[in-house]
Image 1: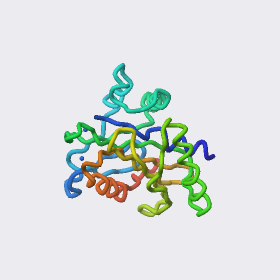
Image 2 (image 1 turned 60 degrees about the vertical axis):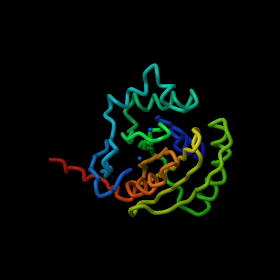
Image 3 (image 1 turned 90 degrees about the vertical axis):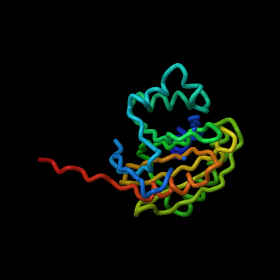
Length: 210
């Protein structure tokens, strides 16, 4: 179970698209294929599947700051339609594209205090081994987001001055949604906007069978 949960946490961590969330009042609603609605600020947009497939081309290594094995797992997710990517269309001084990835997992969010403590204690070593560098978590805790059990962790990204923040929300008994923000710290408002996006997330109502 711990190994599977780790794979959830490290699958996309560290993605570094070279490029901020704007005023929440400018939010536009987008419906995710994962059955949730998100409200995106003006400069952010959800990539289509065709656009997302571009990360699977010959130049993928130039667009992603990931170890080869992890990039291959990402590629498999893209080909299988199991990944969504939201990115900011505004350039930053650093040239880094702040981005948010979404994917679904059957793993459950650790809720009991003992589970959270055990997971947070194991993740630094496991992440360090997987990413091939020293990883120290600057946040790791359980919480509730919009009525859903959630788990959040954060640490420095692969690219200098970048940070990774990941929320795992358990939407149903055997369905959790993982949202990962990778952003450049030159604009700390990005984090506040991401957290607002997560707070405003809600499940789409399923149509009743005829």
